[in-house]
Image (cartoon, rainbow, N blue to C red; front, side, top):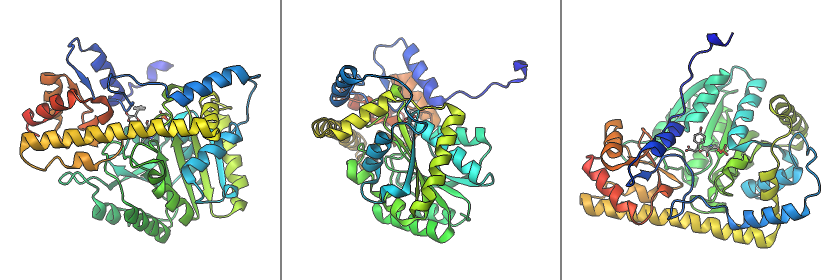
Length: 394
Ligand code: PLP
Ligand code: TYF
């Protein structure tokens, strides 16, 4: 029967990862997949995570099942990290999921259960997995303008104009911070304007937050999510711990369904539990447990926050170095946006031919849409990239 299956398109980011590995050149730079790398190209296990793992190994007495929504202590700790005091805990239903992707998938499933005709508004561009999962699930996708190719900032006028099409029962997917793939983000007054528009149009926000702490800081990066969650009658929040806890392969995420009064929590919680059970029963626990331990132990938490801050500042330093190197080589400020963008990614705005030329001539691997992972750089490779960008005619 399987001969009826069709070839499915591969993930371009993951394909690029493979192509990089297969490139025999020694002089090559991987700016593809969104994984943090230190100056020597390693993706370290964070100190607090290592310490928590050691403690866990010594203290864990059982690996019996947790609950369908995972350990409630994880939901509480991560919920608080994301939402702060923006909404009372009684209004938040939550379920642990396999990574942020799992949370995104469960969120779309919950939307489909509630309203199979929901249209999901997504930024143009967005993380390719958003589109691929929505397509797979048969939910209608409506792109909204987001990136201004001239300024490389947010096309806010276009975004607001497109979100005027939202109708009751529709969902608007927003990136909580550190927009993937562009690096261009809403400021807080723009978040306010979007929130007001969604209230007016009665659209439901869904926020995907996968890089809290990678942009302007742990609290700053959550400001938009908190504003939305405290203003609207209901919203969904998909949070990932892959990047900010460096536990990519542990598959740790949380889906939260926030409502404006506690009465909806029971129904939302039951739905999240149900959805987990349909897909994998109990979510993975190891990463979630480490995150809970780190967040609930003042010493581990302080060390984690300090290391995360080092990571954030190292990426900011690379952004500034790259922007100033490009200013020097081009004699213009047209690459200033690189220092303005936040998070791991920046979209350069190069053509696919220019991206290919940088790969062919200089061994520089970035995603075809000219997204580059800033964390793939170090002080030595920044000038190599800057020269390649200028030579490619960007
Ligand atoms: N959402 C966005 C926008 C992402 O960039 C990512 C990737 O890291 C995720 C969600 C989820 O990642 P993971 O499933 O590895 O937690
Ligand atoms: O955008 C990225 O590079 C990260 C990692 O199917 C990623 O979000 C990439 C592709 C994918 C899952 C995760």
